[in-house]
Image 1 (cartoon, rainbow, N blue to C red):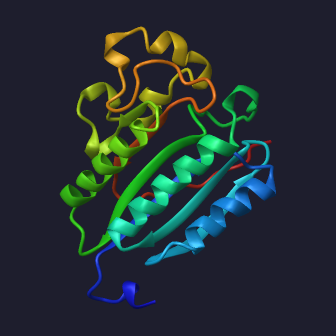
Image 2 (cartoon, rainbow, N blue to C red; image 1 turned 180 degrees about the vertical axis):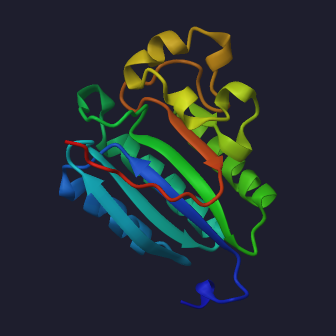
Image 3 (tube, one colour; image 1 turned 135 degrees about the horizontal axis):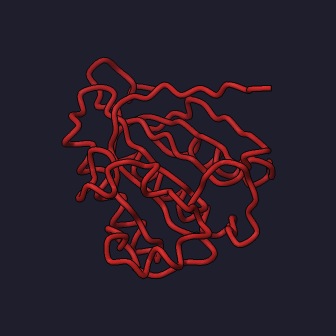
Length: 195
């Protein structure tokens, strides 16, 4: 694992997939990452009620972007948002894909990697919004603002100029939905169950 040395450039991706029940589908995502050269699978967490899985991986920036793009291609084949049910807010088969600079990568470089990924994903016919440090306008800076209304609101959302995607078609993709990609800082998130 010489790509995770003290001198290496390391970029992390914490991709959120709208699947938390079908282990066969999830396993194909994990193996795709494991089989990517210069990338290490760090962690994954599935929740059946949310029907969502968060997958963290890191490595050499080019390889991390390649792995993320391959995950988008796989999600486009295996996940159909028209039948997706879950309690977590979501917009697409891959809901959000943040890139985080970890070592010897600046935030500006992470933004460039996110733009490269977004352009490739958009070319698949998937509407892409850029957020956080990658955002190109105030409306898309915050993930919650972009995601408001969820998958079900997308057909109406696309009719408004302010909600045009940054990459990909400005029309509804019923099978995939839409996605959000961007460079962001490290984030610690936790859930608390209330009775």
